[in-house]
Image (cartoon, rainbow, N blue to C red):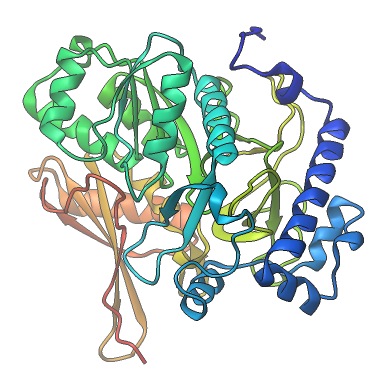
Length: 442
């Protein structure tokens, strides 16, 4: 293991597991106490659960506190406008406010103090360094700025590492390509969907990856990079080494990333307590089991969240990574959204599983849509995977048959397959929308 200075923090990142858990417990006790004392929102929750700060004697004791959902935070803001009662730090310490993204519902606001900004910048620099960003890199930041706060945290961190940063955001596709070529960007930050979109545009323009200086892609905001077939297409299309990145505005926009081993995203466990809970029982899953990711702030000052139900699906591994880091990893990254689960003919599956199949076919583009409809005669659901064939002269029946076979092997059920011409499906400059639900509502 290379002992990098400054942004590889060996004292924290390779801390003995028991010592790391002791640090988490110390910080958890501090967080619960200040939430109880300074937030009516938390006092009510703790009292309803029959919990006081003195009852938190171990990390397991946190299980007595019910997880908090995004809908509950939204309702809190509606009942106590404009920001609810879950802010803990006094207003004179507030420095930035960041609403969650999304097209429906009231956005959930998170506030940063000066210390919050410092911590977020530090751990973002650590996670970007983990994936290979170095001083002198030219970082083209294709994460959105503003409402999608990952752009801002990565901007702060790249500056601290010593990079030259291009704050272009998730728009201006022609200029993105222009900067790739003329400014010789070496690192690209974006969603996997946008990386694939740019790779497609480069090919259309006849730009070879050999003409670019790109070497590294850090991709987050949606599932995709962790899927081998998707990662391969991104890496070949942009000529980069691609790494998975995860975060969310409510907790921290950049709290887990892959190291060079690519054995899962490492969590910043000195700042965030990570749990995996069963979707139905809300009990902790065993190591290696898939469940809903639940996160607790250990150092956040302004708007800390205790047991935040992210609705993202993941696994957890706590063995030491071959890179030497001891912080827990989620092998395979984020596996999807719990509310994206599709139930079809008695089987459950997720869009990420469909993506794995689609992007394994070289005859197809990277785009796909899962179309949900209602059979007018029987009232049963119809699931159709719509894909783009790059060469419409190919025998479509053979391709459909091969697709159905691969989908059945992956999903244990066989959806319909519809083939359309190249360029038919909508492209995105941010997050792709994969499910088109046209079912009749009961």
